[in-house]
Length: 491
Image (cartoon, rainbow, N blue to C red; front, side, top):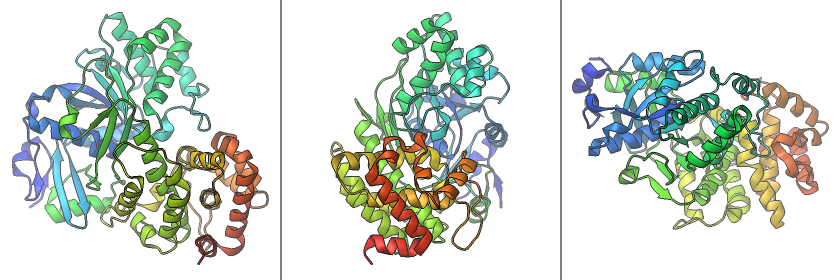
């Protein structure tokens, strides 16, 4: 028998699927979350679901919201099943499935963001959290500095009362809290961005400064923007995944999430108006998240970039295929051990080598079915955060960068838009047209690729990196991906 997920069917869930361990009728929103995608629903929401099950934290429920078309589609599906959804953790030992019930609602997605502004004015909302992707913060990829030149940001600066971006909306919400004499909410980024709290603060204060310098000073002096490191591999939910939940369990869920069992959140303990007791469910609160963030972004996210483009060019569809490929997995391992791990600063109570081994094990989990194409997505925002900084540190230390240069050359080759069999590679980056143009020019003149200042900066001008990149790219075009990787590995 098939059961459609809703409040009415929570007491009839199929065997093997756990129901929320608390009374949903007691939930009251304390967190307004922007971007109800898979990662948030498998990460922050799961931590809160665990906390609710302990009792006494019902006033920290999540109120979902968003400002783009995807959010409207997500809202329609989730509201249609009472804001419930299933999380299925998968590895070689099997499935662990549960229904998450911490969403107390999902605001309408509308022009002017009136519903979001009303929620931000409510003093019961003490945290505004965000998952808006790495590229959603309006920052210069090369410098990490807020870039106000976007037409959307300029529109919010010109018309503060009718914001279109979430950052313009946050500024308007804080203005309302200040005018009412209310304590401001904390703004907590949960995106995989270096110093995500600082980046968010720069965007919010930057808009406020252009609108009202006095408001900007008040925000800078009174609003908390904690940095955090978040981690859980959570691929996109395919129709096949949804069908799996239906056929294996008999549960009809329009928005299930599938993920790995691993879960981590390291967070700076700086909050303006209180916070939930997340330390009781495994969140690690620290004074400075930088060492943990550095480790994760360089080793894990850098590792994804290492297997992504090499894996695609050698025909791998999933991350676990790339990890078991004798060349791709070995390429990642060698670059990590020789060029990345040695320049990652120490992390309290952590072995970086053991962390790398854990990452490799997680990447190789065949149940996650993390698509290589997802890992290739948005390289123009990810490479400057995950690969280029490691190259910069190696160059400063006089260390070898041949593997990192090859990683960059593989990205360039991928962005040519056609694989080695002549099959078109579909657009996979917000700057795809620009990348394709540069990749075509780089086939004859590799310096054209490194000339993207917003991505490579000083690294692109370094003669050692330029020579290594040019040699790697020439080999990819002359000898192919397989032979190039074999040569690098010394096979």
